[in-house]
Image 1 (cartoon, one colour):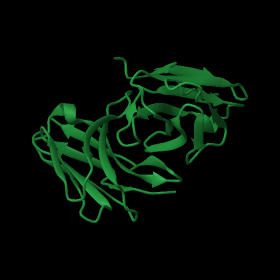
Image 2 (cartoon, rainbow over the protein chains, first blue to last red):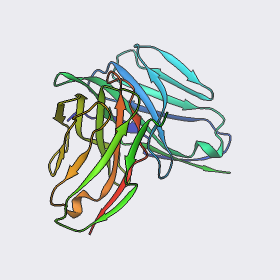
Image 3 (cartoon, rainbow over the protein chains, first blue to last red):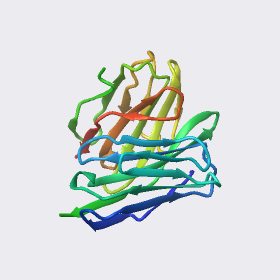
Image 4 (cartoon, each protein chain N blue to C red):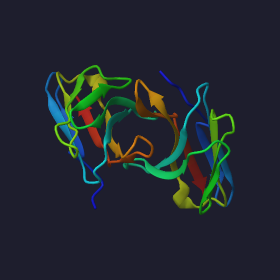
Length: 113
Length: 111
């Protein structure tokens, strides 16, 4: 099936540090999405990107849709304890006649106060 | 506006039993999905639906069945449960297959 390679798999940082994670694929996607999952909860959409090269911010979060349409990154600036969780990238493309999302494996973020 | 609602939140099932995981959404979304998430892993698509009466298989459909008789509901049925089906199941919906909204999940243990 379609694969997204998300890295790093886990991060251990100090509060206040900046965070960067990315997703790459051998396939082209039409949309890139970034989700955050808190323990025991479903993923929640953080940022959606619709155009190659697009750079979008949501508070301390910034994400970019790669110009080749095969990658995306998410940056978190000045991390705080509530940023802890698992971050997933997802790429959307048309597969077998329907729009589908393909998810990365996730980046687990741990913050030391 | 409740969004995507899943029931039950937790369930323990014996090997060989069957059960239905319920999912309903009140956003009038066309697309609905079922994913499973194994510990420490990402989300794998089980089945999806692009509208009432239309369903199709995802990456890991074996051992599951779905139906979509209404826009709102998309139940997932497990037949002859196996330990390999122990997982957290997420239902999601979106309007045009672009931004999925997730339910809170059903944590299922098969013993």
